[in-house]
Image (tube, rainbow, N blue to C red; front, side, top):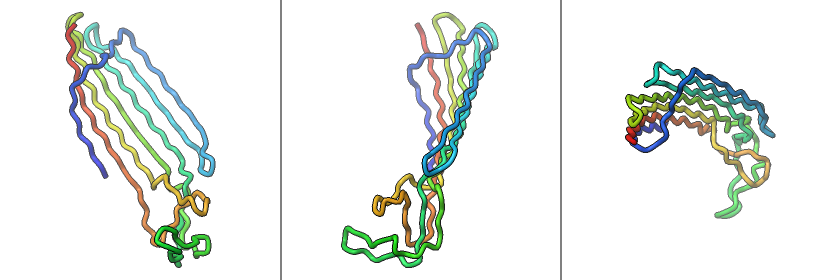
Length: 171
């Protein structure tokens, strides 16, 4: 697990919302050799008064994997220092399908405070979590879009990002 904490100060355009607004987007697709993929996003603009407004954005998606992880009991010995043995002659003891599946959830909350026409303060918080069941790498030889292993070790990953920023702008 990798955790990243960042505080940054940078120039960005602040949101300025005068009216309530909301939108949503839903998408679907498929992965050749994998399965269905889904993505959904929603946005909400919330003015509190003439000086203060907030925006909330949330997104989730799932991409099905397409790489299989195959564990072989009698992994073939290498043919040379740079060429491994023929994995198609081994005996599979486990076959994990679509191991490089990815799931992600992210949320962003921004606010805009404009006490005068010349001053704006825009804080933003972001959280994102990405989980993968395995690497998107396969063995080019024998060309089966699979990763062959002598031992049953999965390689999942989880990344979490927490980001906070605040922009002070004076025109």
